[in-house]
Image (cartoon, rainbow, N blue to C red; front, side, top):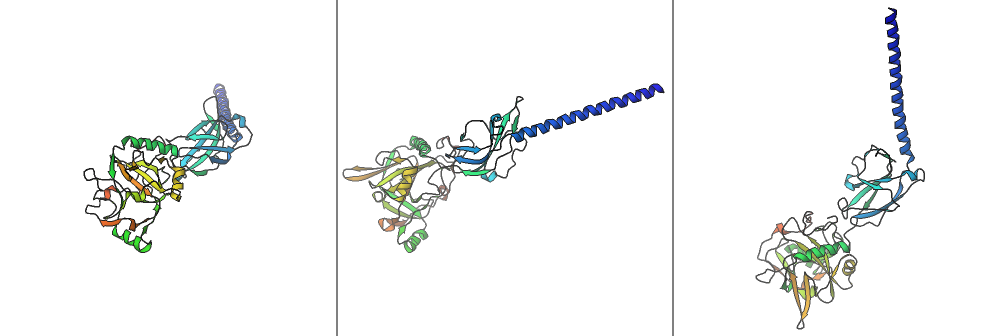
Length: 369
């Protein structure tokens, strides 16, 4: 009986020791967690975020932070989201890496990448400072405030890349003599009644490349100049209406106008579109294009030419692309003729607000689509 009491007392002591050990382990774990939180709080939180030098696929970012523990910072975590996703869950756990991890470099820091940045797109961005530990984990600061910014349009450099790709498939040049514009009869009636017989420029829609600087900004009037190979005349079918305004080419395109390259795209089809802009020299449209678009030599390019031969202006257009020509000034109907076409209205060929195929290798460049 005495032996059993002794064994029971010993068991109680062992249990007490075990409980004490477990308590110490729990406390040690809590202290470790507390220590991690303390370290996290010691890292400075970025504030006064500034975005600058924005392009269609890059930007510079800088911020201010306290000098406290600044020398411990090894990395920056950048949480970048398209604005429509700004309410999505943020990374909350300190050892989960954010979308972009960068080594700590002098600020401002350049963020560049066409695989996650698209032109003319609104984004939100927030920043953490981080310290990489010997075990590979990160201790991080709190997130900075969230700020918003919008990426830019294609620059002239990007448009020149598109231009060069378009030149490859433009094909041989065919002669033509008129520009034409198809619309419904009601359109022309409205022009006569409300605009003194003059077609007015309107803001270009969002068809074509997402980064095109003319979409939603340039004002102009759309014309076509494509001809049928066998007749040399405009086709009798159109996606835009059964009434056609035709005007002699020299009335719109001549030595007193400048020619610009605007875009190159397709709509999940085998054929491609090239947008060109004709602007009277010194006009508001000319000034707009001069700052944003590559200018073409009107007498020598792969898409649309105007040359003097034997005292007359002679015109040619590319055969293997569909040209969409934007003229930036008003055009009076008295300068041409309006008549009904005999063909069909092919709505499937309309490019109104058409989205560019982002997977086409022919007409895409290595920046946002």
